[in-house]
Image (tube, rainbow, N blue to C red; front, side):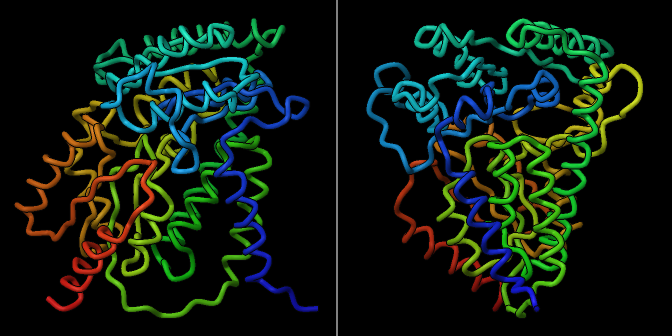
Length: 382
């Protein structure tokens, strides 16, 4: 009996959509969640402790902000405000911990905001080095990761052994390999796998254990290899600006109506280690060293070895893209700063680009659709 490839893949994507858009925690009898704010967080240590790493990606345009504006400024980015709303409306009740990182001024204050409103969740700041190229950077990160390990061990009621962390590293290395293959398909044959589909497949991993996510990705990749494709005359573009706050799905769909997005920085917090983490030796040191030497470039990490402009040019070159879409979340200072630098470099290189702004609570996309369609036509008929 022939297998309906498209139907099977549709079932997987529907499951991923349900998982990806879920703002509440899983049932307590299934998982105990540790919440963390993106972008750079060592999920492997949480996983090794037996907890579920729960990425706090905001509420999107599915939750009305009713309570958060009394606790956080209205000029702060949507991901901070809507995440706070999820806490205040009870969606995150039962979360056993909360960790924020100093990736920007707004994010580093989330631990304090959480501490005033939800002290029972023991909110903490996981400090990251400002100068990643310092000889002391790996040691500094290692000490912070060991502190995290101790906090989680106390919550779990048992020690987190090195072998537990190594086992988690192996699981996450497989996950990274599967995600790299997913992005290879999206880059090489974008008609086979859309960015929205790839996004849902990746984001599902923020809501389930990595073992389950690995199985889900393996099934999806197997089906994608047999998926029929249709040729379409669309320009190839690279999308950047979705590193922390995530653009609404409708925005990505609006772009994909007229363009192939062949590379992006969406959900970079799920893909931030770009190579396999060493599985031998001290696993915590391997994770710390990977942050320094194997982490993806983003607007919220300063690393003189990875200039943002050169990173974008490399993405364009390797994806054989004709143009870039440079986006930033409203009120996102790191994103808006990079937007200016990237625009100047693309001007100098005479590479076409479009600048867009978004926030996760957007619900209207008509004007954006006109902008993107005009941009796509200019690329096709120049």
